[in-house]
Image 1 (tube, rainbow, N blue to C red):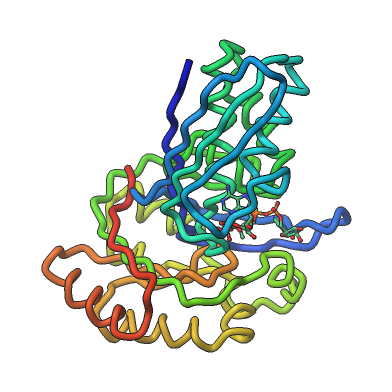
Image 2: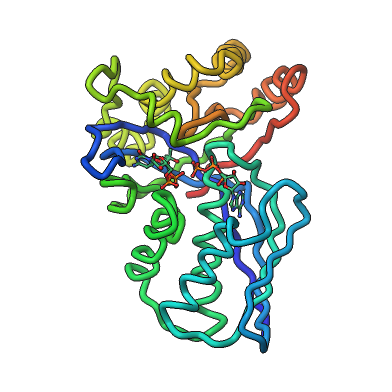
Length: 284
Ligand SMILES: C[C@](O)(CO)[C@H](O)COP(=O)(O)OP(=O)(O)OC[C@H]1O[C@@H](n2ccc(N)nc2=O)[C@H](O)[C@@H]1O
Ligand SMILES: Nc1ncnc2c1ncn2[C@@H]1O[C@H](COP(=O)(O)OP(=O)(O)OP(=O)(O)O)[C@@H](O)[C@H]1O
């Protein structure tokens, strides 16, 4: 038997850090939403007790370092599953981009194997398993638009009916999330997002208020390390995107655009100097 799952990319409409915790992680408050750029995961049962991974992408690990492999091993160990699985990852989300590609693959693998092996694992339990794999995985189990708190695992859904275009541009650099959090001085953050106002803007479909409120406290750290991210931000703003922000720890910058007529101009302007540019829609 075979199952398929879609693993969409996420963007952070806001990312606030409240303080550094004794366990080394940061207490966050962030608004996440998904876009229609997705990996596709195929899971096929194997009679042997083994986990095999393949992908059309040549640049991701295909062993136990792969988050989908870790998700399969976790579910097999925790639920005593003796069958194996062959997992094929059709990657479309750029890697190490701040778009949670690996986390979304892990979440999709947990959802898919729950179905493949009829395990009847509840959504909260899938989210608890996901938290063992990474801070963004619990959110990726259900997706949608949500506030994530704690390390990222405490989730509160938000009703979102925005019909926005999202332009993603990823400069050709790899950013380490651990390094960015490591360099952040939580006590010296200059500007925090106003999460409450952003939630109001989303619920009230106030596009300008949303665009003006976009804020990510990790941006300053990554921009300091990689000036090319600032360059992309400036270009996107000049080209007419209404709201522009770096997603997660970067380096991908996203631009929110309400009018379809503006999209081609911004895309073409960015493509002049950045290879990885995507035009997608916000998933509501
Ligand atoms: C930047 C975001 O992607 C925003 O959505 C997340 O906060 C990070 O999610 P992630 O990549 O799934 O993070 P993890 O794989 O759990 O952690 C990577 C590293 O980031 C740091 N980290 C992560 C999450 C968090 N709340 N505080 C942290 O300090 C830790 O140093 C950790 O070793
Ligand atoms: N299934 C996977 N897809 C992509 N990368 C993976 C996967 N499994 C493990 N990795 C590794 O994880 C690292 C981070 O990749 P990923 O694309 O998840 O980053 P990201 O989008 O920055 O994540 P986040 O936004 O959660 O910080 C890369 O070094 C990559 O080799």
